[in-house]
Image (cartoon, rainbow, N blue to C red; front, side):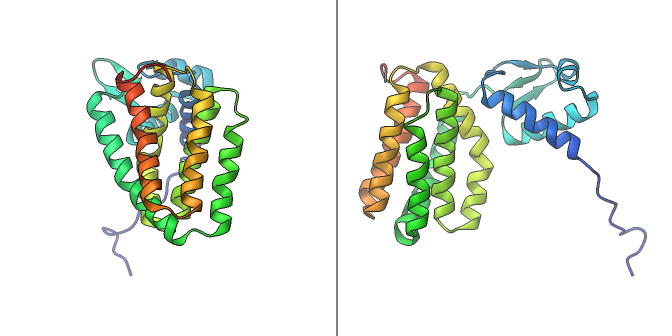
Length: 223
């Protein structure tokens, strides 16, 4: 039998904190709280009609996801990505995505490719930048799912929220031509995956990432 010293403590119910985290995360993703916006526990507890405890726990969850930054002298703010953050996030995403692309070309079924087609088709009907960002993330979710590599999916999940924040930063810089360009880019990505052209697919995915980085860093003109 397990000794008292080694006894596992009972699990805590954290449903409310998780729900609060979901609400705040969604508010960030819809642009209610932009990068740099201050998140005050008192105000959030009033808006969400909960005590400050679940709000505090929720903010810690979001900090682990990289969506918010907590500092004793500034409080909690929505993360503003530095040039170093962008460089690290892009290089890691590229490494993960290159592996995913190679595996999709090798292993993806017709159903997998159809799921990518479906998201790309939804992009063509999006009429709002935040909806387009959400679909962009959904497309890359489908790419990683089609790679049939659970640890790779887990690694993507580890940076997924930060990539979403990066794309929000991108539309905050420039939206000219955005709603037309993004569906076209993703159709090209699907086509390269469907014909199993590894070199072309890797190049197109890299160009897709690079263009977004150029917009965020100011290395390109409109659209």
